[in-house]
Each structure stands twice: as structure tokens, then as C-alpha cells.
Length: 159
Image 1 (cartoon, rainbow, N blue to C red):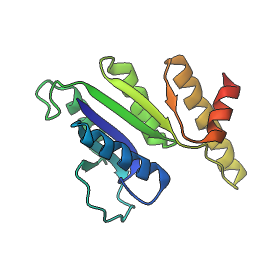
Image 2 (cartoon, rainbow, N blue to C red; image 1 turned 90 degrees about the horizontal axis):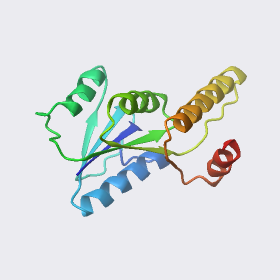
Image 3 (cartoon, rainbow, N blue to C red; image 1 turned 135 degrees about the vertical axis):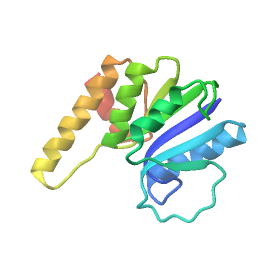
Image 4 (cartoon, helix red, strand yellow; image 1 turned 90 degrees about the vertical axis):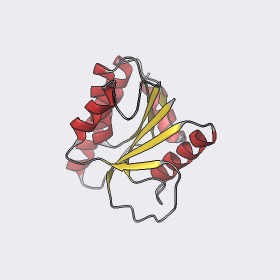
């Protein structure tokens, strides 16, 4: 089995999202599951030593995703589980395309929080993105995991 997580910044990190991703990776390793954390930003300066692999994902995004599906890929033919940590827009886009083109892998959404902003224009953009993401998950019959009580209440209201 292989676990592949998509986070905005390098795990384990100081923020809640990256810390949870690091804990998930450590748990998977204790169960002898190979683990990769794919992150989009090097901003995190965390110096923790980890036993799982962190891989940076920049311009070669599509090439790397395509390599996941090749039979001769370094990931092999093992069962793959992808975890996408939201509210990252990039992670949502990667999830959306993988859900359309990869039916044999397990895709899991870990939605950590809703985004709020003081700027009314950015607040509207975030609301539109989050509504679109929620509708996409509902149409794709996706299970959403969250640890936020406020987010859980809001998701129940929208059902």
C-alpha cells in the first residue's frame, strides 16, 4: 500500500494542516505503509527529521502526476491512497483531475477549515471557491474528513 498526501507546505510544519499531515504519515509508517508527502511551497522552515519522503511539486506537476499512473512508475502497482489537505486551491484542482482520470485509487479529502478574509473581494472569492469545492465533492460522492467542529456544522447545514 502507498499513501500520497498533498499539502500546501512541507510537513510536519508548524501549522495545523502540515502537523496533521505529518501525524498521518507517521501513523502510516508505523503500519508499514510507504508514504509520500507532496507539497507546493518551500515556505515552511521546519527542521524536524522525518522518516517519510517529502517531495516538492512545482512546474513539473503534470509530469509527476502522470508518472503516478505509469506501470513502471517508482510507485509500483500497489494500492494507492491519496489524501488532499484543503482549503488549498491547488490541492483541490489536483483532486478534481485525479477523481476524473483515476478510478482505481482511493481519494480522501481532509478539509481543515473555511477561509475568511477582511478584504470583501477576497472574501467573496474564497466563498465562491469553497462553495464550488463543496458542490464538486457532493457530485463526486466524496467523503470529507474534518476535525473542525465549525466546519462540520456548516457542512451538515449544506446537506
